[in-house]
Length: 284
Length: 315
Image (cartoon, each protein chain N blue to C red):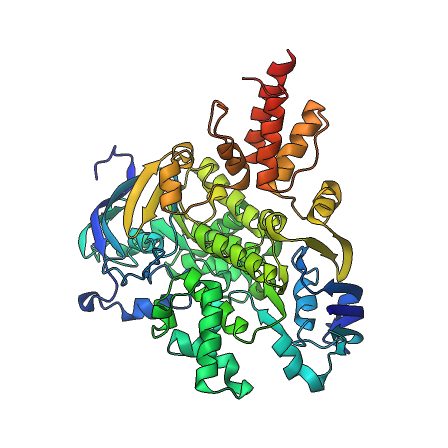
């Protein structure tokens, strides 16, 4: 069970003077249950790759298989039941007159009874922490964080095994962002494969189990957050940051000459400072 | 306002609510409904129950912004930040209380255009505020409209583009620019109007880190070198670190005003408003059994603090 990408190529505006190779032969496998972050500078091909995972774009060359089934023009419906896609600023796509109708919209083609629809909506809204009392409200009365949750909820009603998200936390306030990342972790723990694109290295370090780095339509690094964020100079040559905490401790290690491990999460940073204090290396 | 008064914007007991028939605000509601932050739709979630949308988007707000100051306004979605920004240059008018901007009461129709020239505003979505077919023409749009003579205008436009680092893009078509470049073009357009103050209403929210950095650097430069008053409205706690003053808003009220370090060290306030410290600050904050001697705000400062403590241990 996995998303298998084999020698995937995508060319925009083929056979025109504007022809551009957006993906140049990508091969990778994302196993069921992984939490993957794809990072890369604007224009590196992240979103193009993402849109192949549920057939929004079809390969110019190469192939993608979801749980062994190759994506073609003919099986898009069954693929999209398995692979849910949350666009960037998904709240811009809310259009129904009530929250409930908007969440349930995606179920229309599933030929379910009203009762089954209601059950699914309730289940999904519970997952994202959306209060039932909001169901009859207009989506335009909600705060930014709530709207985002409604939009994600509208994807989760289909009960996807793979959830793809383009910048799920951007534009949210601190609480909205924290709630969104916690939701994704919870979904992942319940078995949903999460694949997201993010510009925030701090968020990626906290939640992802695997980081894929893209440059000019190719994968240039693929590993654990620790492995990837250890390569500060290389990432900086791609115009990518490393997490704030990582940078802080790396600078400290460089300038003090101390041999300390690479730190990527906040909690690891806290533990490291406590350890340094206990060892008497930090003195008031 | 007196000649020698250093206050530039004064809010005196200002209250404003949307949906007030007298205020004819339906247009305003439509205008902001696509805004992802949904600031004007102040529906709040308090953990257990949804309260009704408060009547006032902003209530009894008083504060001042001094000339040349760099002021940040923070608060969660729906706290009234954007409403405050729109009250600052008279896009909205208070239902009670007064707003004095650049020395003029914003409720005075005779001077409102002068207020809008002096207090420019950059919005959140870079695609919503560029109208011309080239960067240069877009920057010239404002001065053109107020009838600036051609020679003077060319000079103003060139200067503005240079300061904002978009000179090389002058002949570019705006839709080919990145988000950060578009926002800098918008700032240049304001600058060409020779303003005293620039309001940025979550202008970095939709940008990638590089674009964000370039906009913030431009804004800081304008503040330091051109002495332009800056009001920066943001969710990003790391953007407020270098502000002179931070105004914290919640549910339509100002709940605290102070220096960034005062805001960052007020744990009760942060947890009440569920505001999150930037990662480096949060690491130091979590080791609360140790006195670091200061509130660490940025990673670079964090490195210095660690180095100083380490030097003491080896000397």
